[in-house]
Length: 421
Ligand code: PLP
Image (cartoon, rainbow, N blue to C red):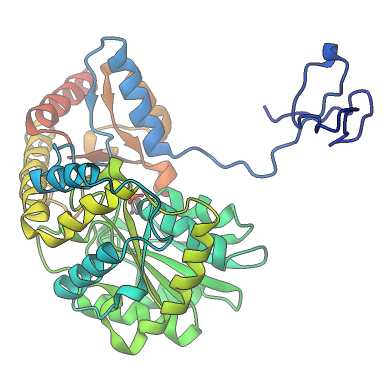
């Protein structure tokens, strides 16, 4: 329930006492004789569905129950020794004070080098902002660029946070729906049709969460070109680029002719299994990065210093991403094999990412309410999955292969056993 407004005994806010100390603001107990005044919430948003399902699973585990977790949005592996060593060294050297708001120069340089080397982009370190995770980069971008009357385009199935990130600024969200039979990919024609004079940004996610869709170079170019023609910012969320197993990843930032209207969102979370370290990257026009850095200086001040030094090591040592990718590829195969065997399916493994996005019909489930289904399966079979509805795809569920292969196989067996009943 929202807070209620109560006038109390009529004292105006910020009344001063005799001794001139300010009366504390906020809720007060009325029997103390002051006033009760409460501030109504101006903005409320739904909690992240993925985090919510994961939290429920962990809660059950804390109660001593055996829970099979297919809901985690992270590669569940121990940090690579290079990351640990760099963090330890930073601690020992006393690198624990504030950093520049845009991030330490060493990390901005390491991130731009990594992007340029792997994805043939041409970002200078001044075109890089280090944030507290890719999510905060997206948040800062939305706060800076969107407001009431603006429109943002999302492509369903979309990462659950895009609509909320745009809506919390007062902007309207326009959704393009893609289909499984088309590989969950948006076409230039679809994009062209939805752009209006009010459109400010397009959220594009390659490789995709939850679908694992991976766009070819020609496909990315065609979409970026449409955005360019309309003067719309193409926000390319590429946080799963380092987990590409089949085919080649193309960054939307790799087309010099369109670089003015592309912003790339990157992160250490998935490539390097550093979700809890909270290191994200925004790569784009120098002026925009400066505005975002100023904005960051008045909000988070930046991300943790130790995490930044650990991230330098992750970007600079190719074996960090290589080890996570190899492990996730084998877990992807384990999950797909288990699903194929237990449900007599012939699934094609997702080309990239961390998830299998599967229809409830393929699991032999007649209903389409994914939230009710996932809640029931978690409560009755202790298998945690994420419903498709918050991704804009009712009738689907997202299964993560971030957990270890034994857990994945046991989870699929438990799911199959429950559904057969
Ligand atoms: N973008 C996508 C598509 C994601 O799936 C996530 C996390 O799950 C993020 C961005 C944000 O990741 P982080 O804030 O951990 O960098």
